[in-house]
Length: 428
Image (cartoon, rainbow, N blue to C red; front, top):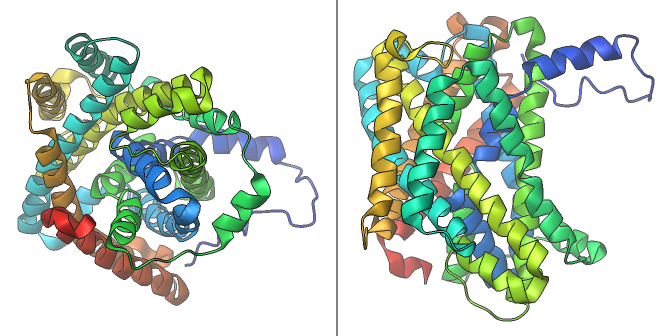
């Protein structure tokens, strides 16, 4: 069965009789898609988009159109599998392909997510240093905060907190609006592909693509769809939750890129991190725009520092057949919460080490994530086309063409990113 993104729209403009009921159901299932997509704009993602705009101006904006389509395809398949099978992605991989590939993925994702969790706490430290707060104060407080939110809450309360955190990404949109962009010029730049064979430009394009789809996202999305208990009859609403999330996250990415392009790039300033971007915006875009940009980095870092370890805990427990879930108490699912605690404590502690090799950690996590992504995408496509699992909800031929093309392109680009990360001179 092929899911058509626009089949539920009333193209004649009539208001359906059951509009209120439809909206009630939509808001009832709202959450997993929006949350998962928005976490993709974490400290590393914001840094990538900031550097893309600061170094290459508006020339990379057009890539967000195919990137959004790719995100639609992959996230929709994951959500659909969760609704139809009632099982997480790790569960399905273990049951269908065996323990060995599950354990191999498990080890890789734990290592990669630990490195990325370190990067999120580095984002907390960097954003708070802009406001004059030492990392030795901000990081321990942040670690304690995200731990308490998860361990002391339940799925419903935690989801509300995450949705509020997702809404705070509007700070980047406001920051962009404050510079009064030329919308006609932006539209022209967005729909006009700009391709350069310059190695630095290619490296940045690959980096922008590579920040869009990460292995942890697929496991987290499917697990939370299952835990939310979405029924097959309600799937069209979850599908729109996914699509709305994809659009929101890439609109935010769009604003980050053009804000840095219109200010930092226009003045020829070189930056290396999102913190550099925020500091550069103070004299160029004004105090309010810069402060909003820095606050957005703090929110994104805290948000991702909560969810990345959570996705790892879901994957490990599903893969090993252990109890998991935010609706369970600590001692009802000890492995789930102990792994979450371990990742939070280690991730924060590494950032507090003087002269910690953060760059090496980030590169290593990037390489592992890039290496795992093609395998995860292939597993997903094999699973979603398994009629014993999906019944009538397998992909149609046309949707498979789109999905496999997306997988191949994403795999090739991601492997190029891995090579670039292993050989730094490629990106120079």
